[in-house]
Amino acid sequence: MPLRGDDLLALAQRVAPLASLRGVNGFLLSKAQGCRVFDAENVAYLDFVGGGGANLLGYANQYVLDAIRRAATTTLAAGYSVVAEVELAALLEELLPHLCPWALTGSEVEAWELALRWCRRSTGRNRIVVFDGNRRGAVEAFQVAPLGPLGISQPLLAGIPPDVSRFARVVPWGDVGALRTVLDEVGVDVAAIVLDPLASQFGVVPPDRQYLADVEQAARQVGAFLVLDETLTGFRLGRGGAAELLGLAPDVSVFGSVLSGGVAQLGAVAWRRELEALPGDDISTPPSPIAIHAAAATLSVLRNDAVYKRLEERGAQLQSGVEALAEKFERPLRVARVGSIFSCAFARQAVVDGRSHARADHESWQRFHHLARENGLLLPARSSAPAFISHAHGVKDIEQALTAMEAALRRMQKEEEG
Image (tube, rainbow, N blue to C red; front, side, top):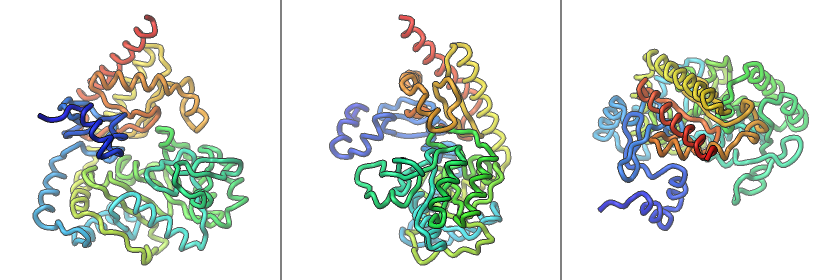
């Protein structure tokens, strides 16, 4: 007899502790289809976590599955670069002609390591500048928190040596003056300024184009490379990602598993063509052939402009519905959205930086998240964390999500009145 969800979590605590930690706020997944995921007891949830943003087309997309089946019969040879890898890089150059060359890696972490090493090697400098809103992922260099003035940082996690954080400066999001102050002090040793255009550590902060332009200009002035984090936004906000949408011209762009349709780990680094960059001799592990073929299939689907039109329509439908619910229940439930990426927070003021994020009502979000899940809706467990709409979400799915949110808000209201 299959183990129940609680029993599986108890087993995981003993034999797979990291899996158990991931399962506390979510659950242990048994299968996924379309825009729904299923737990160990085969209970379905309408999903807006989206595999951390990687699930753009929907789970088990037929085009991607067909590509995986072909790969399984021809190119399952780990440790080799396959013909399809070169073909995929050529396709990426065709879609994004301002970027070349491309380096495909087995994961986002490897892509970041390659990109940062290249920046340091090419400039002869050591430091990087990040923003407190930057997405951290599993990249050790980004696991830093501000300690004092001028962006001085300390390790965010136990086990990270202080020397790692010594080479990173953390600047408050949205504060151009603070960035310039830090660069006045250490700009001559800054190899890269890393930019997450949505400040996704705070959910989704609608981009201020002037601020982003100021960051780009500041990087040019001190001779540092501007590295754009497209791990969430690349190919999701459009084929040109955040760079095209926001008018940015980064020197280096880092992409993630959105490329591979969320079915396998994949990372990519791309350089501005004018740099005529060479990745160097630090050859990373070849990406999985499964991921390569899945990425080619994903990009073939994304050639169709109707995909992005559908994503925008569903995003607008969800946003207007949440705003109507907030007004109906007189709750400070805010939604911020850029394309198919959105975030919600219980906050009197819009979440736009670290201070406003800290003032949000995170306890109310925990209650709301739990009650929404009881009604079959899976949202990010952390307040203001980004959530994602996939191409598999239809009009009826968004209506179901809004119904679940309404039920959760009504339950919260009754509990408070009682």
